[in-house]
Amino acid sequence: MRLGAGAGFAGDRIDPAVELVAKGSLDVLVFEVLAERTIALAQRRRRSGSGTGFDGRLTERIDAVLPAAIRQQTRIITNGGAADPQGAGIAIRDVARQVGLPHCRVAVVTGDDVLQRLDLEACTVLETGEALAAYRERLVSANAYLGITPLLAALHTEPNVIIAGRTTDAALFLAPLVHAFGWAKDDWDLLARGSVVGHLLECAGQLTGGYFADGVRKHVPNLAQLGFPYADVWADGSAVVSKLPEAGGRVDRATCLEQLLYEVEDPARYLTPDVVVDVRSVRLEEVGPDAVQVSGAVGQPAPDTLKVSLGIDGGYIGTGAISYAGPGCLARAQLAADIVQQRWARVYGRDPSALQMDLIGLTSCTPWRGLHAPEMPEPPEVRLRAAVRAFDRRIAVDLAREIESLYTNGPAGGGGVETSVRDTIAVISTLVPRELVDPQVEVLE
Amino acid sequence: MSVTVQLGEKAHCRFGDKGDTGLFIVIPYDPQDFDALVAGVTAERVSQYLGQLAADQVSCRPCPELGALVVVVRGSLRGGVTASLALDAHGKTRSGYLLGMSVSWNDG
Image (cartoon, rainbow over all chains, first blue to last red; front, side, top):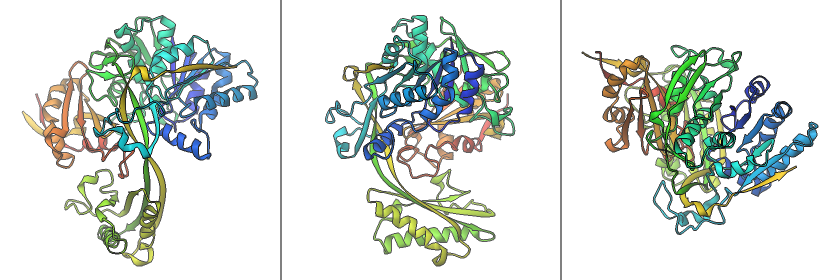
C-alpha cells in the first residue's frame, strides 16, 4: 500500500503533489490542509457571505491532480472540507464534471461540527480551566477531532475522493491502511504503527528536508524542487518512507527523527482518537538512498474522550512598522517606541503595557529581551514593529495611525511604514465524551 | 573533560508548538554525544536562556532509544499562535535561537 503526502498545510505548494501523482504510483494521496484556526476562519467567511466555508485552494489542488489520479486509481483523501465538507464535495464534483470525469465518486464526512451539541456549562477549557460558558458570546466554531471510524465508513463506499472536515492528520493516512489490511480497531500496536506513518507524512515537505536545511551543515539537495514524501506500508505496519528519485530533498534518519518527534509533547503517550502511541519505541533505519524503514511503534488503548477545537473571536490586531538606518538607528527606533507608548497613555488614556513592541533584527524573535537590553549591538538598520489586540476595531486603527504619524513627527530618517488591521480568531480546546459526536457519510455522484 | 560549546556545533534542533507550549527536539549530530547532550541541555540552563522562565515551566524528556531530547517549555508562547502578538507567534524561530546557547559539554 503506497500513501503519498500532497499537502502539509493550507498554504502548501501544489506542484509536488502533481509530480507525486504522475510518477509515484500512489494508492492514496492525502491533502492535509487544516490548521487550528482554519475552520473558524472558514466558518466566519461562510457566515458573512464573503466566501466558501471550505479551504480556498482545495478545488485548485484537486483540479491539478484529479484526472491523473482517477486514471491510475489513486484515491484522494482530504480534510479540506473545513467548515463545509458538503459544499466542498459539491465543488469537487463540479470540478470533476468540468474536466470530463462525470463518474467521479465523492464521499463527504460530516459530524465533526459539535457547536450546537456542546453543554457549555459542563465543558472545561483545557488551557485555562474555566467553564466553556465564559466564552459563550465569542464562540465561532466547535469541531471534534474525528478519528478513522467515519473515514472507514467513507472508504467502504469506494469513492475517488473523500472530503472531511476536522479529523486528526494521522487518521487521514491510518484509515486507508486499516481499510486495506483489515486491521482490528483494537489492535493497538498496528494502529500505532499506521499512525506513526501518518504522523511522519502529514507535514509533507517537513519529512523530505524542508524545515530542516540550514544551508551550512544540514545540506538538502535541490530544495527549490523539494519533493513530497510517500510511504510503502506492509500489513504488519512496517513502512519505508521515501521520495521520488528525481525530486529534490533528502530522506534519512535525521530528517525522519526530527519529524517523528515534531509537536509531540509526551513521546511516551502521543494521544490520538484512535490509539495512544509510544513514539520512543519507533525504529528508524536507512535501507537505501532516501529510504528509511519505520517500525516498532507500540500502542495503548484509545482515550475515552475526543478533543474539540473551539474557535473564538479574538478581536482585532493592529500593527505598524517603521525602519531606521545608519549610525544611531537603534537609539532612534527606541525613541520612536517611547513616543508611541507615551502617546498611548497621554492622548488615548490607554495602558501602554498592552502594546507589543519589537525591534526587527534584534528582539522580534526573542521578545522577552525587551527593547533596551544592554547587550544589543548596533545593526546597520532596524525596524520598529508595534502591535495591539482589541475588541474595538478603532483601537487597532489608532495604533496603526500612530506609527504612520512618526513619518513627520518622530525621530529622524524613519521610512517604509507598513500598517495592518485584521480581525482574528483564537483557539481553545475541550474534551467531550465520544457519544456526543455522530459522524455521517454521504456519497455524491 | 568538560568544555563550553555552542549547542549548534554539536546538535540540530526543530521547534514545534502545541497551544501555549513550546517543544524543542534536540538531536546530537553524533549519536555517541547523547549523554553529553542530556547532561548539558538542562531545564535550568534552558529556562535561563529563554528569559528567566520559572524552573517548573521547562522539562526535559530524553528519548535514549531514538537518540533525541525533547524539551517542553510551558506557558512560553504568550497564549499560543492564535493569541500572541509576537511577530513569530508560533515560536518557530526558536530552534535556531536555542542552537546559540552555550552549554557545558562532557567531551568523553
